[in-house]
Length: 136
Image 1 (tube, rainbow, N blue to C red):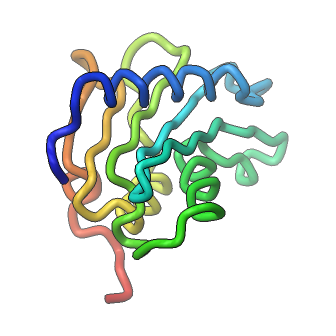
Image 2 (image 1 turned 45 degrees about the horizontal axis):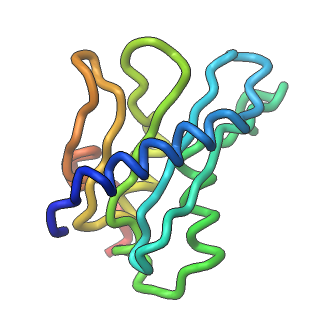
């Protein structure tokens, strides 16, 4: 993954914030948005959608990935060039374990940005979930 220009990172952040405003979060009250720069150079977004049966809740990251998969014809492992995740919560909002697994499957070689304990973290997706489960 080539270095992303600051303007591209800012655009991803803005799109993630816009997506977070659409979140359905009556239980946690935390509105999360994700924006993906996909291999086709377009941006795809998602927001969290909660459910009274908590296990049926779908996170913003997985919704953004599904949104991209609907539209991009590419090698799946390199779908995500970069993903930016935000929330309206103060402090750290890293992806959950399930999202880390899904991001790792579709983001080989990509970057992820999310609020960490000391500001925005930027890391390689491969570092997000060391030794991620894989069928290959």
